[in-house]
Image 1 (cartoon, one colour):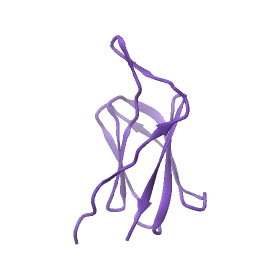
Image 2 (cartoon, rainbow, N blue to C red):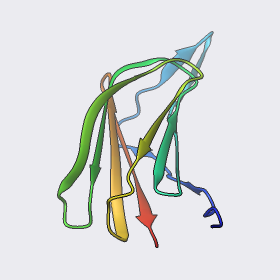
Image 3 (tube, rainbow, N blue to C red):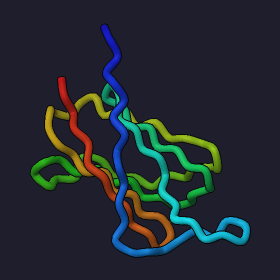
Image 4 (cartoon, rainbow, N blue to C red):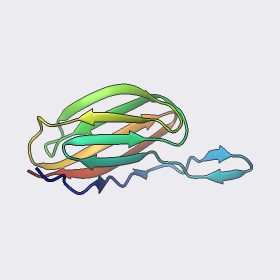
Length: 106
């Protein structure tokens, strides 16, 4: 069985909070990739108490949990039981909320 192409989930943010790195102020977003019915979340900085929420095309929550990501670490979330369609992934950490959309195809 061929592996599907990775689908980067582009995250967007409503506020303009920034993470201070050294003497520079840079916007920060974790990296989220969807591939083969699995969400890969990674981060260059530690994220404690990061809430992960996935909603389906009807707005129903299909997954919700609180995770901790170490700097340079990742979290794998299998979502093989979900139907085809558009899904929204939301991450809440600190005072920030970011979200992105991904598509599950058979």
